[in-house]
Length: 379
Length: 226
Image 1 (cartoon, rainbow over the protein chains, first blue to last red):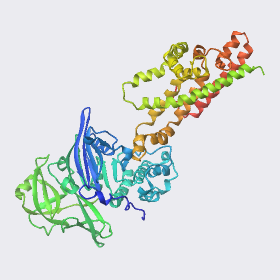
Image 2 (cartoon, chains in turn orange, blue):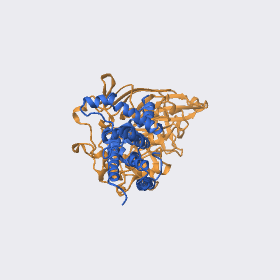
Image 3 (cartoon, one colour):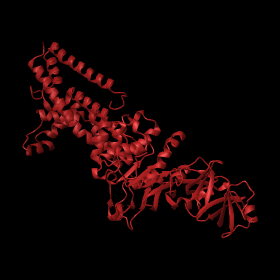
Image 4 (cartoon, chains in turn orange, brown):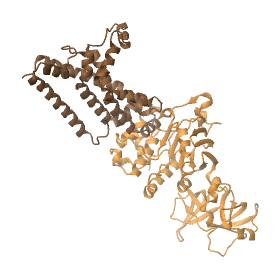
């Protein structure tokens, strides 16, 4: 795979300094609903906007694109102001250097795939073109479709064309509004690897709206939880998912997401070592070999983590991590508690019975061992 | 051949009138239809109703008010006189103006339907791909609404060819200036020249049928228009 998005435009050095990142503040009032958010997002990597349908995440994305008017707002993307209602600044959508992927692919039905791809590409000045047609088509695996009309493509192919079309405008911000929501499970699995590749190769920020925990867990580095038009949390995904004060932590399938790098693979037992990005800990999981050093993302469900005061050498559980208890919180089920522990910088959640918590006298600051029964590799 | 020189003049005049009217209607009707399909203004209903008025008004009523407005004492007549153009009634220019009003709904409504069928999403997609409003209109809206433009042009042309009452009210019956086919048929009938009336009337029937046949067979779904 030679074609890559490595040379997508990074913001020019002059504006980097203090103004890097995205500052987005919007106040929008609809009948019966208002969006009121003030977000500071990283200037690169994937930010997931997560929430239920109707929570306002799509409205927020449309405000960023300028497709929906904000009654008052401010938007600065890596040093460039796109909206400042106090100073009557509002850059129209077609002058914002962004790429937008809609929930339905929204290809132009009267143009071939190639002309769809080039529609935005030929409308930006030659000097700003950083992505070539072959690069984008290769990255999304659509080289063989260029001569076709959109009506003849499958849903997954159309959405890949939509993503490539957005990339070909050499955007400085990429926005995706539930790009997988209109696809069936098989098509989702077809596109997710392409999105993960984008995540690894793109040097521009990507804001990804979804109500799917799986997609967010696999793709996002930064997580914003939106509820009733308000951002109730915003932070690095590992920390945000491990927060006990948020409804996501109280759900039955609460989990944490941890970034790591592939280590050695033991062919005799089929075990792969994953070194955690923070601290010196590592985990081992049953997995096929992965090139050492490759970036990996793993998810650990709270119900798969148990706690012990001593290292259990004689058990069957493979992964034992020394941890310190940070917080113990009640859950929806009074027989259970959720314990947040710190494994040398990496937050973990453990869902255990309240009986066990009392018996072990778990309290903030107490040292313990986390026994991780299952580790799933996301990417 | 039983068609007279006068008949040929009438046919030639009718074609000129219909072509010019259709061209003007596409120019005027497109922005009106676009506005009607996009606006959230409270004026949308009233404007839409005014555009559709010629559908239900007797042509004599429309012709009468146009005659009054364009006459020497009328609002339009004073303007044209001040501009040194004289007055429009009983002139070819007057017929063109009358025909534009008379055939307006037959152009605006197919375009309005076609624009609404395009929807908002292609416009938003174009905007996120750096296309400004005019660019979007010509590169996305016009191609997607092309069947609507074809229907609008055909119906506007055919309806103008078939115009009679408005022509008689504001154009009269002046050979080579305002005497169109429909008026010429009327003259033949008044003069008891039924054979010649048949040639022109039959020609109109064939023309109208062919036009509508072409329209209905070229269209996959007869959704736009009437």
